[in-house]
Image (spheres, helix red, strand yellow):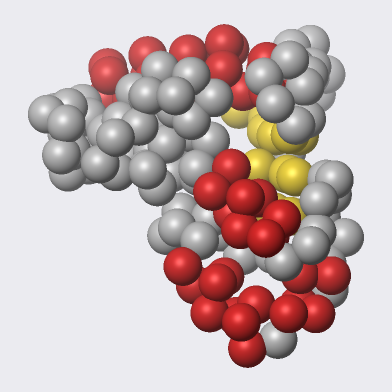
Amino acid sequence: MTPGQNGPSWWDQAFSHNPNAAFAFDVWATHPYPESYPPHYNHHDGVPYRNQVKTIDSYLLDLDLVAQYGRRGFPVMITETAYGDHLGISYEGYPKTTRSMAADYNVAAFGQYLVQVAGGRRGPPVHPQQLVMGGIRLGPWRQRVRR
């Protein structure tokens, strides 16, 4: 399915038009882009206030909506997510990211938060796609990649 970075309203329109669309996929692929919101600003910990969409786990909003149309228990795969340089407009006062902030946020997001989510310890299991960067496999795999 499509990215979840824009919130569930688009899906609500699609499912309202064709409720069977909620049953027309095998895996929910999502692209939660948190922009300038740090990893601890997330739904699993009950933190988001104004901007519920720009979190590392904004896909939970999509899952709630799909459940309203009668579908639950399908696999979720994060196919894109990251913090970048100079991103974000925060309503809660978080500054735009710098390279250093983005690096720290990415390490925390993948090393703490998404690993716990992938294992199902913080809600439904989510499977971050195996990302290979600089010879190190990120996610719960954490082994060196042989070249």
